[in-house]
Length: 498
Length: 107
Image 1 (spheres, helix red, strand yellow):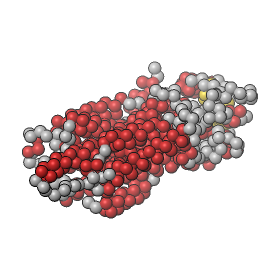
Image 2 (cartoon, rainbow over the protein chains, first blue to last red; image 1 turned 90 degrees about the vertical axis):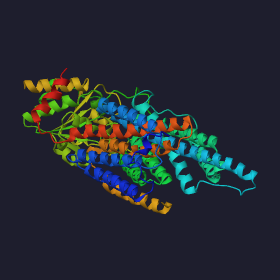
Image 3 (cartoon, chains in turn orange, green; image 1 turned 180 degrees about the horizontal axis):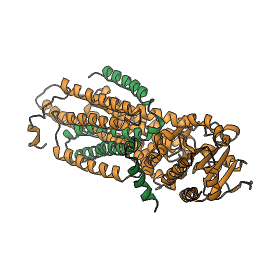
Image 4 (tube, one colour; image 1 turned 30 degrees about the horizontal axis):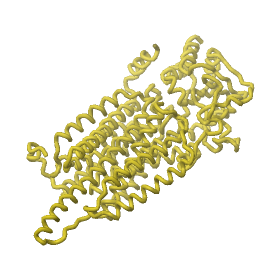
């Protein structure tokens, strides 16, 4: 420990003193207030700032406590983390937000697993010190010394370690899939469920053994590390078989995990800011997971433990040729210009083509011609909850024009033209009508109810779910083939000429 | 602090969390997630505490990595959330906001 800094006059708060406790209350109150302001787009930014102040209070309070040392490491770690975080947040593209959130979920989980390990090593060190004292005590015929880690501390520490390690490795796999470093198709081993079951059983047994042997002298670091590794394997094995279409659910779930393990670590370290902060994050991730699963009409267990899209994963070469209508950009522009109301249904394909700005220009052109334009956003329209809204906001689309699925569906029968851009499965009427379809029951944007439908798409190929979309063969539908951005740009040009 | 008090805090925080967060509209779910990324960076506190009683180089390395990870979460999470929420804010200078993005994506 450096002898220079601990003599700072301010660095004198007693751990567990009332002032520390109150400052932690202040900090988690600011978190809650910040999230509360996050319930409206106009106040959310201020709310984020307030939550950040809460974090600054929590960190400053911790640094001001007695027993905080190793300042060189603390300062170096904070400087490195600040640089990496600041640069990453400036550079990341809005289309890459899902990867970034996945990565941050992983970092949080990894940090907690490491902290739990450091805590365990600290106990082992204490055990060794007591062992030395014992041998001294034995030479003079003194009493038998013993000390143990209470289960109130041991159990949350083990939970924090296991959940942290699962979320670190699971999130890394999710990141790899989203970044396309590893294939986004489901990757499964035969007997995967049995393996996962065995890994989980091993964690439970290991946890019980470590929990029973809570005398400081009996602590086993090899077993602890073994559990870290088994949890890492479990996290990897659970996420690998999950396909690209289910990623929004997985990211939301992995968002909850570090929160839960932070809360467990808070119990082990007697730190209320960690408990409340972690629980808030856990609640948020849980709510989002349930909402995403609902939007896909599947249970969370089904997503985690069953593959999706396995029937036609190869890419529908067996589909018979059905008649469809296609149209060029000029005709599409005319159809749009003479409409009274247009609803744009964006999908991830729009984001991939970077067509957001072109779409907003199209909407501006149409508005000049007196056409009413709004956007219908399906809950799973991007790669994570709310992703499409962010992408459109980046293109300066006013948030008032972004309509949620439940809000827009009743308006669609009165809509003159629906423009589907890069979306597929979320518009497939089979979800309502075809009980044999894998997506049957999934809530969709009922595009087939609109008077006319334009589908902007590269080709007739199937979507993520690997199934054909009846919408494309509907007599109201016209396909406009080509790159989404190019097509929309062409339509904008044509609209200017009209 | 005894375990019962801590569990009480946890349960109450869970109810507050569900109550407040279920009112966040779908539009703001991505910023919510990056903001909660920042908030779970609170684990930094754990890193700061454990590095204080490091006894070996390995302990110091573990603590250093935990501090780096936690700080990235906090700084990166809050900053990227701010960047996103800025785009949702009311656009006061309408002409400027229209011109800038239009110019860059025409290429």
